[in-house]
Image (tube, rainbow, N blue to C red; front, side, top):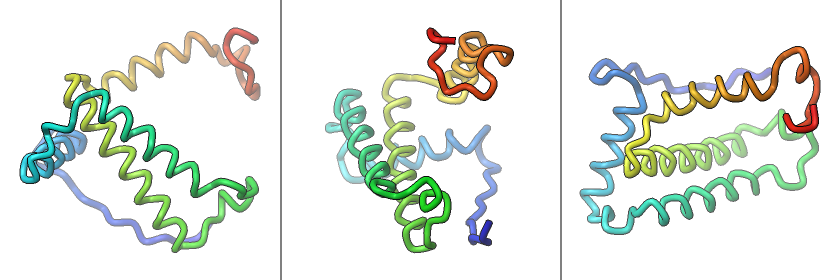
Length: 129
C-alpha cells in the first residue's frame, strides 16, 4: 500500500458532510442558473454517464493493476468518483431522499438477502444461494 496524500475537511456547520455537499451543489447550480436542467431524469442520466467514465478508467486493466493505480491515474479516478457522488447527491436532493438513511436501510435489506451462513465467500446472487 502506498502513501497517498488525502485532503481532510472537518465539517462543523452541518449535521453531516452530505448536507454541506448538497448545499454547495445547490449554490453551484443556482449561481449558473442550471437548476432548470436538473430534473431527476437528467440527473440520473448524467450520473450514469459519469459512472461509465469511472468504469472506463479501469477498462482493460488486470485485477492487480486496478489495485495499484499510478498517482496520476488515481487522481483521474478520484475526479470521476466525485462526479458520481455529486450527481447522486443532487438527484437525492431533487427527490428528497436521505442518502444515509437509504444506504442504512439497503444494508439491512442486503443482510437479510445475503445471510452470512449462506453468502460468506460466495459471489452468487441471493436467489442462487
